Length: 610
Image (spheres, rainbow, N blue to C red):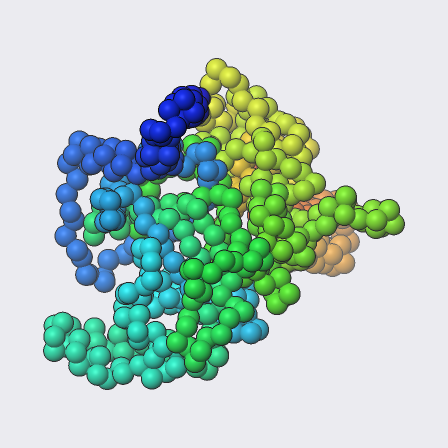
């Protein structure tokens, strides 16, 4: 296409050279540049394909359900997608979900420009609470859709809830006119008047009006009490996939993502709440994110709590790089305001976003490369690869590695193979071969696809050594193969898991000390007549009690390390308890049999005397 375009361009140039009185190059070049295939805009193709697949599936609009008594399993996951894979991901999704069409001046489009202005104060209180995942942490933003100046604005509040507490994070919003934004920011919004209008003209019920009033008052109150002002703005083209009123599977794809600082201009008593789009931005006032963001929201109910197969296939396609708890707001604040943040998210150390951060003047939040260090600093540096707010033990969370382990050209997203490893099923003898830990390269048997490799993994044909039988941390079933596991394939943990590990350790320790106490008591209070056998029995129990205590300590430390690093694989030991329990049972059985023989001999002697 580019060759043909340049050829046509040169032909027109020659034409104007020899016929200067009738130039046509400017006219035709302008027409060419306005074509979608020249601009790289394939929205019309996506819209037509979506309509075709929707007709073939015979999609129907689901009736809106307002029942709150249903039990749902809600989950949200976010992924980075390389720009070259965006079209393939769109096609993979639209085969199963219709595109939510957007009305534009030129017709229907598959995407829509979305702007969101986030609020925070001088201390970035909301930023740090969201980054720390504090219970009840909120994010407050003003959102509008479409190009040009906003007319209708949505005031949105996102509240974080820890899933392990049984609660779910919620997003609430209400709509206002652009002219009313100043009233919201100043706390002069006429809540009572608007509430009456809702009930009289819009037909809202009393409960709906009360909920709306509570939300509005809480938003205005938090703006006033925390002294919130516009802080950061996100702008992107959003493509949404969803069957109307069916929340089972919802997917959104954000492309051309950029974050803009909303500081450094006069708010004029809150009459101005976003930057003038006509004015140019300085290099440190905008950062352009190099990847697209895919978000998959599942809301499963009823007997089937498993996601659809096509969703799992998409997640295992190798095109999706999961980034746990990624946030545009957090990324934008950390990059645009490096002097004000006290901590930064872990993903800023990813090598693929490093250039965009440096170009925006946020290099101080990054770990320094060896090229930027002096000779003395190189000698003192421990090659930790740790930047502010990031930790070396979580380097497997970075999709493309850090500056010391650059995997940009070799990294792959999650596959069926890595999903099997997440379940503790790995067999390097069939399809996957252990590779270099630092390279992150996936070595696959060229003649096998994901399904065949997954079948081989699930067969469990891998052998284990004797050491692996005795000690769980040496078992091949617990090996973390960096070459097979996707970089962001990590176990989801809950805070109570740390305490559960401690309780398990204490229970094992209690069992070991109890057994030791029994053995010591037998040695001390054994009858002199049967002292020899009692001593043998007690000395058999003492090593077992000591082994239980040592085993409990080893497993506690091993499991604590795996919980801390969230390494995929099994976190339990199915063999140790069996081995220790079998040894204890064997000693008890031997003692039981010995006592039976002793009783038999005693009865025999008594019978002979009688």
